[in-house]
Image 1 (cartoon, one colour):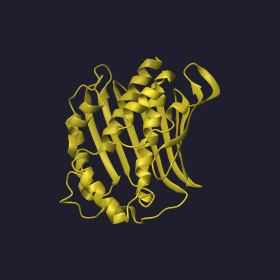
Image 2: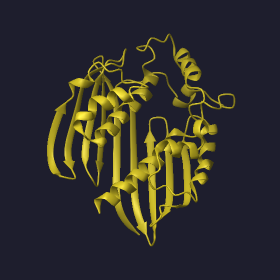
Image 3: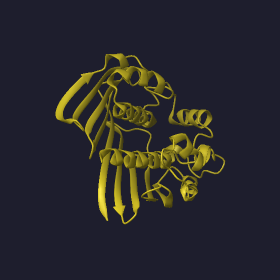
Image 4: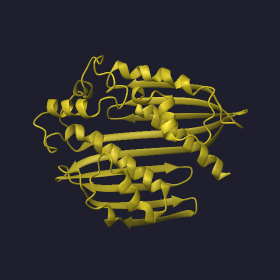
Length: 274
């Protein structure tokens, strides 16, 4: 078995002196880069943004670009279109991905910013999420069956300094005539793993497995069984929305979807490298 490609992400959200510092650092076989945001903790409006490249397929060398075009953007749900337009001059899909990860991390950190965000209590914040995001994932599609609330899972309602951390890893192996993809996610609230075996020539899935080691509720773990829906499917060129459909749509685990999508992107990058 040979290791062909590796990718690692680290997302961090910190609260310091009435501002949120959001960083997503990527280090892989292909490149090393960092997306950085300074965000208002009450409005989630971007105050400052920067894109740093340390190594690219074209060569090494540190380069920092300040991005004033992102200032004022609300770094929250549905900001994707505005953000992609602002980042278009960079002509770098990696930047789009890392800044999207930064927004995802910020949304997770909101768990500990309910007062700054205008909610009277953690309970009020949780009730708002339960109402607005019903049917958005396995947990919020089965609120009638969950055995514990969000803050019960988190274990506390306040946190200082470091509000959220996430680490993701993708590793691609070649074994005989099969590609093996292993994807892992660990963050402040979740622990998720996926393994895919694909035929080398056709990208057809020979086996697929998912595990949720930490999740908000046991109902989330049921989504892992839907990974079997990928078996027998040719995933070459498949879009993320189609992965989501195969894994259950509103009953899927979004982190399983992300890991499968990241894995197929890893396979594509490895193929391009050749």
